[in-house]
Length: 155
Image 1: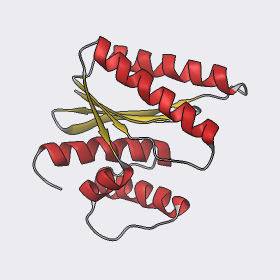
Image 2: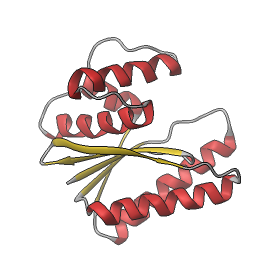
Image 3: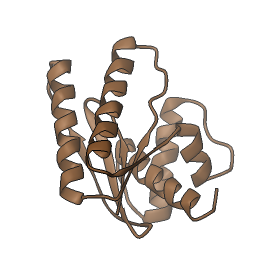
Image 4: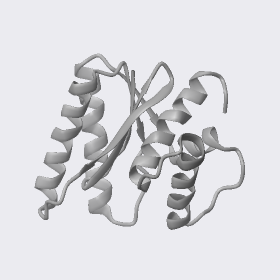
């Protein structure tokens, strides 16, 4: 089992792959105003998700540098919490940069703007899996699929 994550402090997409094939996906969506409490709850929900599915591998998108330092700190802390959970539970931890997983999905030209990349992600999931999902879930699905593609020798 592989669990892929597109993390944030308010809306984390996840996808489960079994033997390299998409199985299930969802969204951890928190509407908590206080950012510290929201981040704390997100870490706990991700931990519960990992406990529930007991994956052999967790693949997560590497946090990219954002303009807002507070958001960057929160993403980095969530990333670290997931890494620690994997270390403690002896789960293989893999990270993919956004450019890396997008290339493993499609080697063609990608949009540059954030909103266009979100639409690209949703359209790829629609094409590959016939699913209509939001961009958090579509990114999580594609991160998992990209890892499966890389693992199976494709780019």
